[in-house]
Image (cartoon, rainbow, N blue to C red; front, side, top):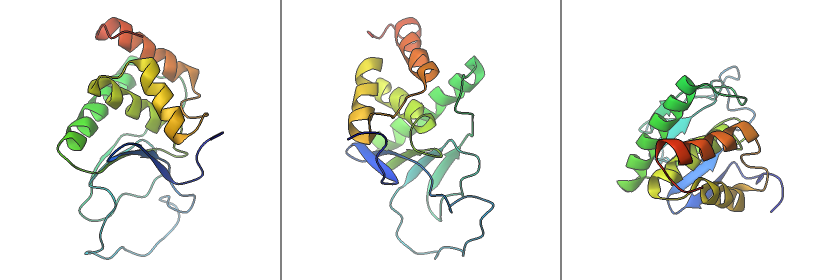
Length: 159
């Protein structure tokens, strides 16, 4: 698979998904209210794109928008917090999604840290994400460098 998967989201591991936001599913585009009782695809979602419409009824959403560029320590600390929450939700048997705008970098950063919590190395996490989502997933070199540094320095994970 080249580029980014054209599907809205991809399954990285069973029950653990990474994806983006549909072009018309943003806050400045009006849409009808969803049915209160419609079945939802996900139980728990991390949203890293501020313009994304909120998830629907009965979906636990954790939102923290940040830029797809160099990140500071405060933002990376929040990413780690989001990943710990997502990992906990996933391990409890919930269907989980990490999403951003395109489903490439911000959602991938959260997903990679989630996979590292699960025991993956930074390199293996990035490789799995690219295998499942597309070769251009996590193309932000600052994010990848941050993952490798986190792997080496903070948790003594191997590269």
